[in-house]
Image (cartoon, rainbow, N blue to C red; front, side):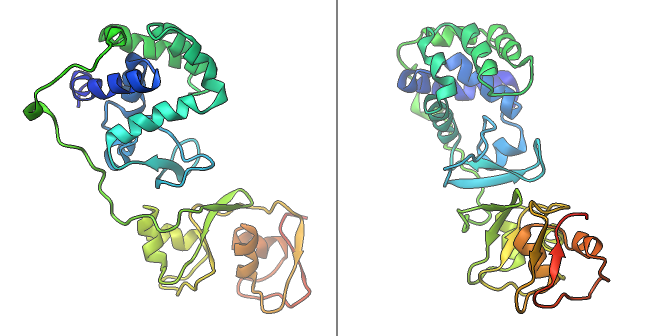
Length: 282
């Protein structure tokens, strides 16, 4: 879509959000266009996320993983674009750092634009000015003066756009060890099913978990959905009965090959119960 097409398609949704939640329609539209590349980004097309909102603590909805500031970051996924618009309004209204924005006039698009940048919505130092440029170029500030949503003919309305669901999310709770994300395997899980769920190549899931191709996954096992780290957040651990070096690697989120190196062990060799295994370079 072009920007003109995007505005024509979603301006009514932006006005609805303004009248319901108090976020200027010009701000909602300009942010959506800037963050989603006019609805053409992968995040917009496959997750209906038009504002680049990441999962954050407390999100229990659908998720979509893609590289951003870090590899394989978690983003919110919605059934429809309008859900994304509504969540964007809720996101701003429920966080203290944006509280001051709602004290501004609904028509003060410049104050909102610079306020979003100051509050940390984006790291780009020119974020506020970019929003203002979009708003003024397309006269979006005129939408902020509306008191009702323009009535359009029913036959002119576009059908609801739904995100394609390859596999409904099964693992809502993503945990962390050593600042690395992992899930706990459930009955029926395979490395392949997890790679589909988190939209990550199967070869990468095997690699992240130091697992052999076609390895059998058991319920209760840790499965990392991003690479483990090169060192642990503690100096060492003591091997428990029956633990392999890979078990230690999974338990502490440290790459297996690094454990071999830290402990001067040959690949394939295993520690004994009670051995001290270093998780960092000594």
